[in-house]
Length: 444
Image (cartoon, rainbow, N blue to C red; front, side, top):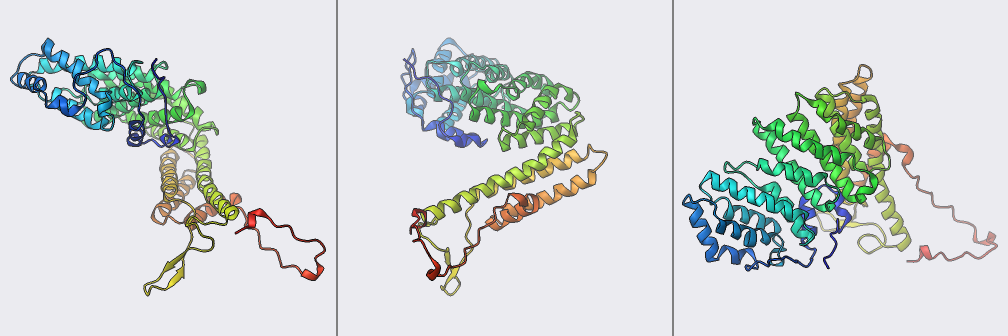
């Protein structure tokens, strides 16, 4: 009985970072069960085999993609994506398969037949319940990486990738891998400016519309947020391709506004929605600019409160345990140029939180500047506010200290700052009528 595919192993996937996503999944082991077990148990043995050398010799000489070549690709090549012998080298396996099976083909017709065969099989593997979750993810990623004879991303892979992304019966992590492929395609279309831009974009658009409209119960929260963040990012890139017909993205715009107004959704997702909506306004799509700006200002406060909450949590932990992050009570100490100990400023907020808070503020500020251009009134006011927000975002990055965060909080949301309680005045012991109780929270 095959293990049911899982979505995520760690909440760190909420950060839109595919490399981290792959690293976590590479550490996940799952038994591989395939009807035809490949004879070559890893890429090295396949590359060194006489069969592989004969394959490359034939196709480099201009031969057609024959049955024997197809069988080697299907039975020995593509299974390298999911067999256990390659589980720690997933990305390298995809690159090496591309090189040995496709780059060596001289004839254009043979190359097309080989890639068509690969597209069909990779689509099947991505949807398969008979291989490991790693294998299906790797198949979807390889589908998004395949290139044509001219070195461009393969257009025939766009439709199956879009269908995988849109299909709620497919494991969410595989849909995420397919969405990554669509993102690469949009980036390539932006760079190429080719004649097939709009036709490819039209194929991708329904998948993006499906993702931003995902109902709550359809996908676990972490996966849903990740997909929708990526969908907004890809949709923003899509606007540059579809600048002559931006109305095609109005469904995405509508759902972005719904997500933005939902305070229960994550801060980063709502910021991505603000970015997409501001870019939509720039190309002529009508958006409720005043409403978006109001929410954007609140997101600035929420972003700062989120980071401030970490500081407060760490202070409380230190107060309860009596231990600092260094495992000792008291102030942090450093040394001056003469080697003498000096008291140094103590920072509770980890560096990664400064980077994230900086990104949030700068991203919101840039979006607010774009949105301000749509206003008839208060345009200058919002532009000045955006400049101020951006300056604090830059400071958080350049000076990652608690004092920088507190300075920003005082500027934008002073009401949320917790007033430190003053130490009580010492009492006259002669007036004490009841013995003091020993608090366990004050033990050192």
